View 1 (cartoon, rainbow, N blue to C red):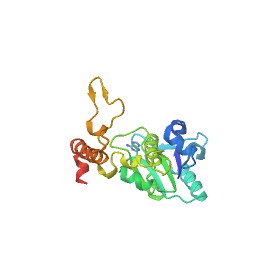
View 2: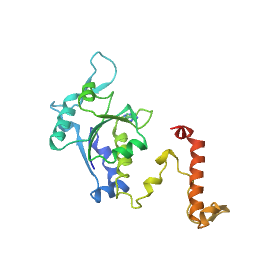
View 3: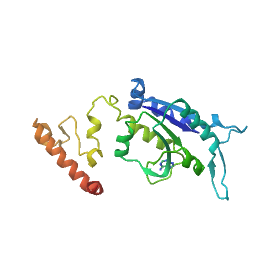
View 4: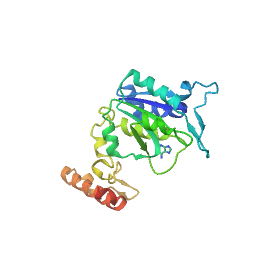
Amino acid sequence: MRIDIITVLPELLRSPFEASIMKRAIDKGLVEVHFHNLRDYTTNRQKSVDDYQFGGGAGMVMMIQPIDDCITKLKSERHYDEIIYMTPDGETLSQGMANKMSMLENIIILCGHYKGVDQRVRDHFITKEISIGDYVLSGGELGALVLSDALIRLIPGVLSDETSALTDSFQDNLLSGPIYTRPAEYKGWKVPEVLTSGHAAKIEKWREDMAYEHTKNRRPDLLDE
Ligand code: ADE
């Protein structure tokens, strides 16, 4: 997978890709991430990427020209499966969306700032609008990081234990139940006996039951879906 991120703040994005799972995926050649500083595509001397709203009102709007030039250049180099705009009024990111999108070859992620982008960008370039939740961030960059992480860890070969993404919360619309590691007893607090019984079928059944209970308590809405 190749991810091209268009941003006015590339410095905010770099370091998360230089650690842990995302770094490993890049080092293994399973994903390529490229940052494009929108200011490099401005044609005005001040290198400004935003301007006042037509019709008046508070807040600046990201201009179409630098975004058009950047996206058009990228599209001339390869095909993109999706051109994504991170915005609080987009479709809320879910595990189901991440599963599907992790199979894409090339994506562009455009990070919004200020009031957002000129509507014509959304009408003519964007193929998918994604929100990471019902709250407003100061820009799309943190959303782009969340989306990238959610996708990258699902790419086959990225996680060392191939099955572990399959047992995450939200896969099968269930939250994961409790997990434990050594010691089996700590300050008198014991690990559930079934887990140390060595009885694989019982453990499996216990995990399923716990996942169901946990989901029923925390997120009953998932069981309706
Ligand atoms: N930009 C600002 N808020 C956002 C959100 N909640 N999700 C995605 N992009 C955003």
